[in-house]
Amino acid sequence: MATTTRRSTLRVTTAMALSVLSLLGVLSVASVTPASADEMRDNQYWLDEYGITKAWESTKGAGVKVAVIDSGVDGSHPDLKGAVVGGADVSGAGAKNGQKGIGDKPVHGTLVASLLAGRGHGGKADDSPKPDGVVGVAPEAQLLTVSTWLGSPNPAGKSIDDQIPQAVRWAVDQGAKVINMSLSSTSPAWPESWDSAFLYAEQHDVVIIAAAGNRESGLTQVGAPATIPGVVAVAGLKKDGTSSQDSSTQGITIAVSAPAEALVGAVPGGGYANWSGSSGAAPIVAGVAALIRAKYPDMKAAQVINRLLLSAKHKGSAGHNSIYGYGALDADAALNADIAPVTVSPLPSLQDWITIHRRNQPTPTVTKPAAQPPVTPAPMQPEATTPVALPPSQLDSALPATIVIGFGVLLLLVLLAGAAHLTVLRRRSVIERRSQDTS
View 1 (cartoon, rainbow, N blue to C red):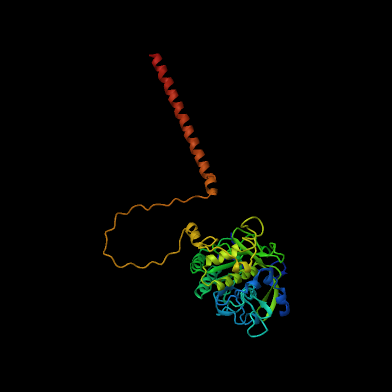
View 2: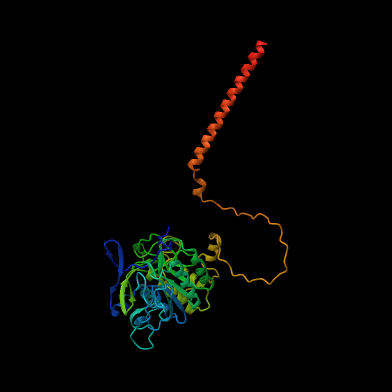
């Protein structure tokens, strides 16, 4: 079961693992390691090693809106200047434009955004990207920031059950073609209130990328929203390209893997940090999704996802596996490889999942029919009942003890009564024979 608050809402945590400071074993508080702008670009090893600089020869993401649903993004950071084109707060506790860091890790959203669409700074006016600071995978993409309160009780009282679907819908309505969610819950299940919002994104051809979660944060399996059908779940890799023990987790929904250790990023107020976590892997993949959508503006989400997965460099056991998914991200191949077009995503459909697994479907919008003359109703017929399959645990379970004992007592009484009745009959038979002999 998911960890819940007293209001029975999912406990959602940011899927990051920064340097931690333990306070008497009660709470782990994330802290960032300060770093200078000069170090940043040299430390972004993934730009060359994962084909990103090569992909920039085709596009840098211009014209594509990407939403970052997180703790808020500081759009005033020098490396994000001009990147944030819209924002909102769905927590009730943040700034209306979504640019104030809130929640348990207020720096988190800015770190994520810088890896996705950081512009860098310095150099000439027409340089893209700029030579200093952090540059994102899609440095010309436009960012939409949606601030949510994660990881600790929301002072405004609004639950994650309500914040997440509102954030997803807002992002879709603002024209986002890609949504990044570097957050994870403690359970693979998700509130039913999320169904319609994620389905709304699916129906509007939006690609959603989500972090798989971190073992270092106590997660041993992928948690929602990375378990939601159709969502691209991203696992974390070490600098050497192998699976990260701390900054990743495992599960059958993992789709692709990307760097999650030895990362750098921007933090609110103009600073920088060294950090790690699948929270960093997700925006790297989201940035490549934005590059694909920029190069192929008419390409449907199903094909974008297909290119991301089929172009990945295979790792681990044959085929798709629960550690690496389809393999390690390859940005250059994702944009330029010869991959056959598809009409259906390689990932499951949320609509199909809802149809099979949810008993109470979202109420469809029905147009009120024109008035009709009254009709005499037919006699009421008993409503057909749908058979409900019991889980094996219920099918195999023993009868309650009280029923078993009660049945045993009843059986004993019946046997005793039968024996007594048989004795009476035998005595009558003996008396009748003696009477006949005397006569």
